[in-house]
Image 1 (spheres, rainbow, N blue to C red):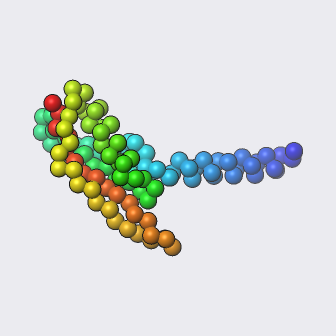
Image 2 (tube, rainbow, N blue to C red; image 1 turned 90 degrees about the vertical axis):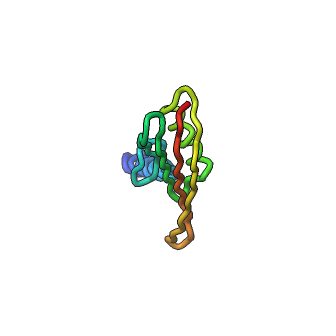
Length: 107
């Protein structure tokens, strides 16, 4: 196999990996691909905000909410005032992206 063929294959593989990793919003601080943030509003109370991209489901964002609340409140928590919003944008096809807001109250 020629070196050029190997480089082309590697480049294609690298490009495919980049596309796949950008599909779903990562669990972590909100960035250009989405994520989740938490802000303490009172002792034992946190305001959570999860933001997705066009490939992130509401269920995934809800799991991020529960994961973050578990990290912040190891003895248990209740999620209150959960609000889901979606907006639609279009780059040739309509894409819906979601945001969820909630308060985590530690037990």
